[in-house]
Every structure is written in structure tokens, then in C-alpha cells.
Image (cartoon, rainbow, N blue to C red):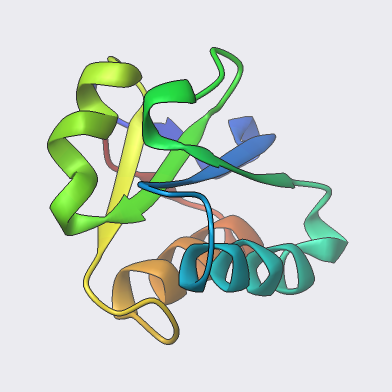
Length: 102
């Protein structure tokens, strides 16, 4: 997949391993940051990524599992749960236009 244009992003899923802790905080932070954009942000286990997700956000250690669970979806992987440059770039792209690489 070549990527997805920011105007076509309607749902972001923050995928995690256990469904608790830092990834829940990240999903909450993204909801607040993207409130004005109309993008929905959900939190789900990596093995249960919904088919209607446009972008999957997950820790780099889960990226391979996320790709397997949601083939063809744009994937943003990060190293640090709060303040990671990859997540900051995603928010910037959605707010200002551009494409999110797959």
C-alpha cells in the first residue's frame, strides 16, 4: 500500500498487546489532539484491529503482528508512548494535510 491521504483518515486504532496502561493514555492523547479534525480514535488489542481502521498506531515491538492482523492498513509504529516523533508527525499530517505512509 502506498499510503493514505490525510483527508481519507476517519478512524485511527491504537493497538496494544494487553489493552492497558500506556497505550490507553496514548489513545486518549490522540483523541484530544485530533478532536477538531473529526477523526475517531479507538484502542484495541493488536489481534482485534477492526476492518474499518484507516491507520493503526502501535509500538514498534508489535508492528509485525499489527501488519498481520490488519494487512493493507497504514501503520505508524513508535518507540516512546508519549511524545514520540512518529505520532507527532501523524497528528501534524492530519491537521495540515499530506499522506501517511503505509
